[in-house]
Length: 311
Image (cartoon, rainbow, N blue to C red; front, side, top):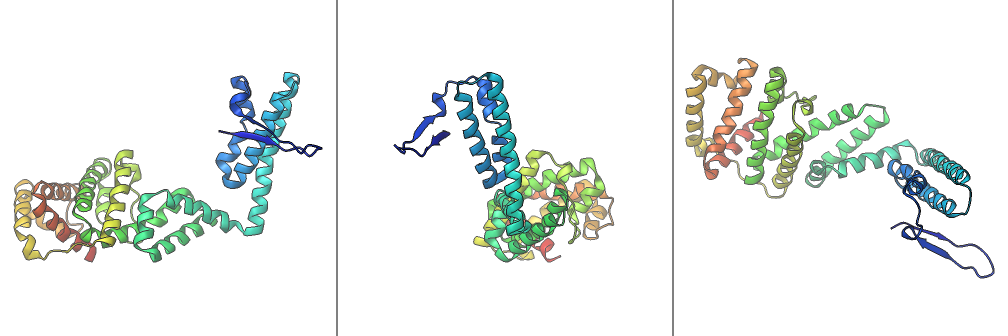
């Protein structure tokens, strides 16, 4: 609840307080008086102070026995002053503390609101610090949001590849389920993009957000965070080839029956296969592994992901 409090200086030094529920204003009077709230929304702490004072002043004016035109003119002027004050004080803050201080606060807020980056901070503070500084530098240099986001992808991909083979069983299965959805959605829109997604360039990984549904994109963030968190806190054991050989044989036979020996063998040579075929076989490979009993499927996935990580 918003309260307005006035403490006038005077003989009694009294205080007047009232609740917004007691004002009995019309809806449009409330709406007009609350216009400075916009500064609160966009301006952080400084905006909150300027907007709050503006709303308090507007409500005090609206309550007075004044002509309607004067009330709305005066409160409109207060709103403009509130917004103007925000920009003045924000500029002063930038001058005193330096633009990087505001940028750092904004980047920290964005990173803290993303569970994937929260997991990175907990798992690898050193990498998180490098990522954070790189993003701050990018924002300060005027790069677009898309360019800033691109800076974080190599860090995320590297940590994901590192922790994926040793993540929890549940994290590995969840990641693989989402991975097959991503492969199929990207492959349906752009086969070359799908190939690049599966064979990323270390320095500039593909931005796949434009190929995915919002639901799958959000699932990707959640499963990646789980991989990094569980892989760093309770690492599992990567099995040997001998231990997963029976599972590999079952999956390989299914793929050969569907795609042929030559096409399946070509998976080990990136670029040897048509891109659409490459993506289709890999998608089916992971789907076939997921069809195996979990005690068999999870070690096989750990083995496959450890090979990708080493590569």
